[in-house]
Image (cartoon, rainbow, N blue to C red):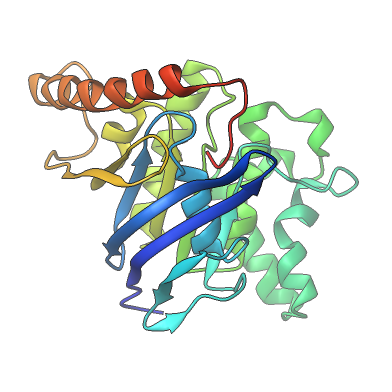
Length: 265
């Protein structure tokens, strides 16, 4: 599928709570072009995951609309693959079976399944782990399997909800580089939620900074640096300083308003 454009128009999301309505998203308007790598950045409570779940079709907007190539999103679909922070692997299945699960459900040709499996195992450095089970893998390896499972279905859009948030710094950087290789190789459109300013700058074509509740688009910044990016470069650190100011202002609003309950991150 080519020219996968995502249009988010006037999106509001309201959650019901015991203390009244909570406006999680307000007046979200974004256009994401085919093949773009976009990071949603902001503190807890700014609606990053709420917006991602709306794009996935898991939780629809209260008003407004989200379309892919002009088609209204009303439910999850094969054009959008989701990678979660928690890996979401089947513990009773091997790595190979986890990766090919969706293809087997679709009753794809076994030879094609094996070809796709071999390709993904090689790309994500999982070949020697094909017959292992999730309990035998590190967090980084489990996340590689989760990414491979989404890639196996060949969804043109990858939605990623803080997929590297639970990993140590070295594993996280390794997975970031692997993801950039995947993005370059497979020409996916990626929408990636993160709390990390440095991660957003390292990965994204665009960084959408969201405000604390109600979540709105505070800034939409194009990252005009060649990859692979050097976190010690003056350009990287200048953008990091700018983003830190924007995000910390929202973090302070979050801390001022925080009452021990967080809804709609």
